[in-house]
Image (cartoon, rainbow, N blue to C red):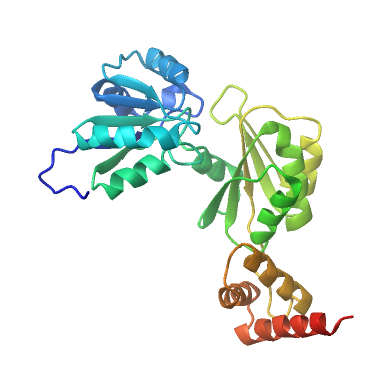
Length: 292
């Protein structure tokens, strides 16, 4: 059912929370915590520590909203919104929906024409990007990589020619494997930065080539990690051979792109005419068919 403008709908408020230092809490956060009819929190215990630290008291109903119950709880929260409630969504750290619960609720609220607003707050993605020393004019956030080695390599190969700066989240116990995989796919000399424990007491930003960072991480790293990787250098026309062009097209096709779109994207990356990439793909196909 689509609600009309006269329906007494509530408001969904996405609130950014500190990623480390409690003093970074947005000024509006305390007011929204006290005002909300419903507070949906990724971890209610973390919420309790946050409110105690800010010296505020929630008067609304507090419910858990995390990956395990996100699908089941979303309809309940949407109905509360449709009935006029002000629902505040907070995660353990940073902005809801950014590698955290929130997307389903936002999408459902938008579908019902319910107002969605935000209390801007700290972001590990932007903080790491700014501290990395790498280009910030164009970047893309890739979230967490797959845990399985083969899937992780496949995901990295999808963006190996990406010229924008790349930002990833990673668990500390997988950091060494991830950096080693990045060095394998992007090249050991590609510049990167590992940002650890941002805004916390033991904040550290380790910058260097991927190969060196992988060796450093092999000794063990603790804390919450954000990895920033320099984008690929722009290839000069003719620099990429036919075999590599075909491989890049195949990677994109395996990721779900139509062949026509994959060829166009690879041609743009390599600075080549689309016809040249198309011819390379056709030649490889014909060679494969003739092979015994």
